[in-house]
Image (cartoon, rainbow, N blue to C red):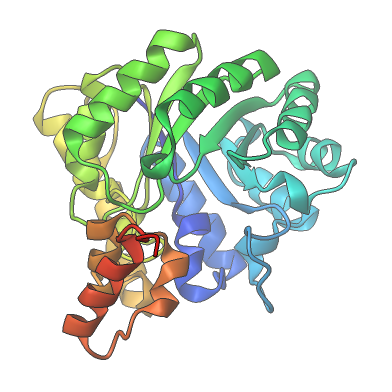
Length: 311
């Protein structure tokens, strides 16, 4: 059985500065839950990793917003994600009281200890917890094993492999899932980005290798070229005979409304993001590419990945 988690309101927020209206956010969550999606990630708590001015509703995740969400969908379907450096001591308690029941932690690979301490507190409060190991394509495999074991020890129910750069291939995903499964009893998840158009193939490979949690977004709305497309994924699950418990028609109706009302939601594959995926570069490197000349951008990206030769 696969647990599906909708990330549209959060990851999609990178396209519209998290500027979803409350009316739309509530209806999106309602329709997703009515279609059978197990969890809806309603936004960040207190912002993304890099501070940005003027964040909208789903980028700040106020208690008032959470309470409004808990009036239209059960708390057992409400998820938020956070960067441990952004929150204060009482944030977790306030989030739980307002209605969040799943909290996700973006875990820095170099200094995970502060985040793991917050994770332990969340587990003690009764949250279901996930750790998102970001930019997993660039992470040393030994370090991935260490972080996975540390996360399980701290109380993580799910360990997510986040293909932040959208550069992984299906066989690589399969090997990573198998590796993490060999060192932890926590469930394994995949958060796929679609820079190379492989989010669907990678998600299939992850599930075939034993992953049981999958992130997706309606229309694929997410950072850069976006995420695994929910409606594609549900269509695959039904067509492959894996499950018939989701209402694909309801999700398609939601996708049509998004495409009609939210310009930033329309599917897009910006060429610079394809280049980033090809060279396994992070979105922060995009600013270094001359995006008005794709040949030059490709050459610049290649130089960014070339080893420095000592004089």
